[in-house]
Image (cartoon, rainbow, N blue to C red; front, side):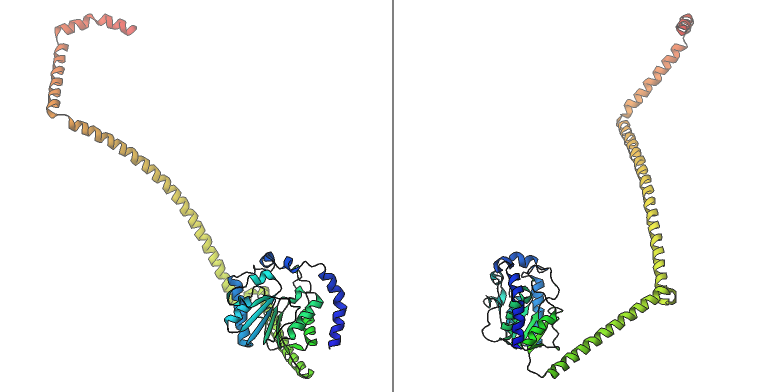
Length: 364
């Protein structure tokens, strides 16, 4: 098994050297801008990442119950913090000095700058390596896995099989590629541990010294369960498609659908009626507003006339009644005197004498 591993390493060395020669240094790669823009949601101490790693910590503790743990490629130490908060003696390593400088909470002092290519001192109940080995060349990836499996009997591994867009992903491989390497190192997937709380492709790999027949039995059992689940889901999807096709082809047969459509049509009619009523009400409102403006103008004019009459009445009320009586008496006296003059002989003679003059003025 070791010979096969060595042969594969030598066959990939030339490729890894060529790739590595084009990669910038770690200090140039894993800086603040990398963590802010290359991981989807900015990788920082925010609610999203603390909640995510808190959930991961809960699942690890409840299902694996490790006393000691090491997170290789720990970045800001979120998983280390989550495990320590749950009573696990957890530590972390990362090659980025910037990332280690961002460690907070209970992980402070328990994360250090260290490459995954360096041998790991001591042993751990669990080692986790999340989205790390795809950043390494094929040779370095194998070396990192060899270092990790030498220091534990349980490895929680997650490495993307499809993200080729991230510029530092130089070794993206399908899940079976990593499973084969781990099998050569004596580690096999624990088919009963569902690691999808991490990613859909994550898995727990454990050291096993069992007969091949036992491992085949376990894989066949898990394979059958997955195939059965897929069959049931496919059958359910096909059944739904068949029902949809039947409803589309003959919707009148389905009473509930017909009733629902009738209700929709009724509601649509009511909606149009309500809209028409609203438009009519708006028009009536406009006419009423115009009439109201006319009434207000007439009322303002009437108020102005009323003010004039009130002022005139006030003036009349201010006149002295004795003065008014004297004025009326004097007016009657003047009228009487004028009447006497008009009936006098002098007036009559003078009126006749002036008749020609009046005629001349009329012609002029």
